[in-house]
Figure 1 (spheres, one colour):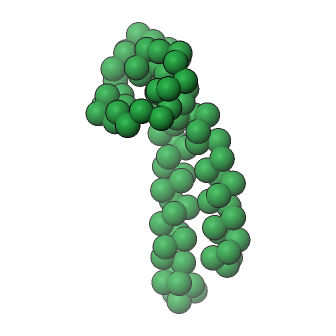
Figure 2 (figure 1 turned 90 degrees about the vertical axis):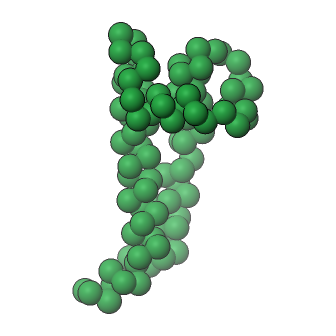
Length: 91
């Protein structure tokens, strides 16, 4: 796998991030305002991502878990991209 192909995969994987993050932020900050997507507020968002802000809100829990998986795959792809030369040297 070349770095160019992996970079294309990372770019394609990143396209739905705006939708997923927007949906998650709207639930966490309890708003439907579009401006929540451009505001630089991260504390409550990170708290909501790594803990359980609304334990009885099923939509929040599903969105949070989906967002966690999405970000985990994103991090794995990024790490593979960074360390691709070292990975290829072992093979």
